[in-house]
Length: 393
Ligand code: BES
Ligand code: ZN
Image 1: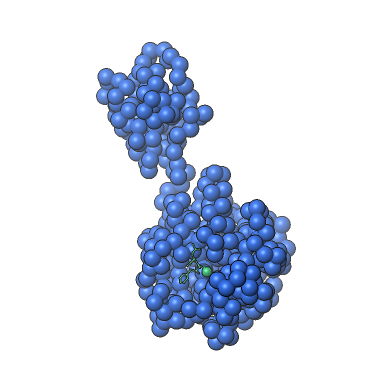
Image 2: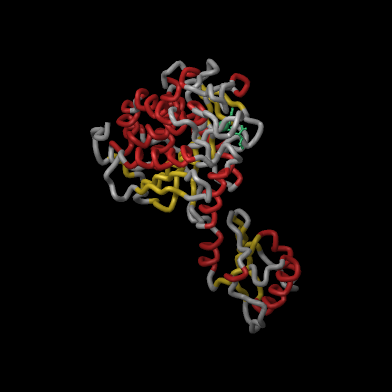
């Protein structure tokens, strides 16, 4: 995601530099060979982080390097000049170190987990699936966005908690609720699901989407309700996202990921909840291996063993089956815990029959995913609760 292909930022343009000593440069690693070709002196790679290298380069040959960068990489400039090694390293290093997936918030989760309420999840699925459809281009699909934003707003009177309706140029909007971080606010933890539904029999026909994906939205909504009832103040920023237009090619999530990338928002992890309430297999939670991060998946396994106490297995979608793939493609650690084995999936989705009936009119299975979602948010975003008792029930 990071690159120095920024002609406008390059301090060295295509002009003559005065002869003199060496400089520290940060440069894309794919241009190291070009730098070596541009001088007769040895070029040391002092450090390399991701796709950016810090090199030592003679000032006298900066002009030649600029010309070569322009000719070979179409980057007039394309490197940054630094007075000190410390400055070069600060540019090359990521803003933060690797994510530490340590489990140390058991006490906070001891307050949160017992509050998760199956009846609340059931009620949300009922309300969402009672809408005629949540098709991204329909009026009712648009109404689903405002309905959800109002529901999330009802969970807290805090003014630091913001709710945005993201306009994508079609009727349905994505909904983003942000709980700002205290000590590591620039690092963002995402928990999401998709708000839209679809039916293959006439795009605006009945599409209750109770499992796909009212269940995921209801699951993350329950996590939001409980953490806000406890006046949760995370260390990292937490974003709850209901993506628009997943069913037509991950359009809402792709737009959001593109925007976050452009704004250089540092997302440390994304969890996708898409289909959580149909128990199609004996084993409870299935972690999709494709388009996901093995390291974050291993963290989820420990969360399941420690906090959810459910059984789990590994499977694959076989394709970019949901919004986690949008994050994955942008280099963000993503995971997709799923309700069943792929081979035993809910066959009623994308039809008028994707109703709560199929899940036995209860939300017992989704409740496990709510526990996992809460554990994910709290163990990744850390922080503390400022209120002991639930107040928004
Ligand atoms: N929830 C499904 C994906 C899914 C279905 C995962 C069954 C595992 C088992 C999602 O809403 C969906 O329908 N995705 C599309 C692909 C997307 C890129 C349009 C699909 O599976 O056809
Ligand atoms: Zn679907």
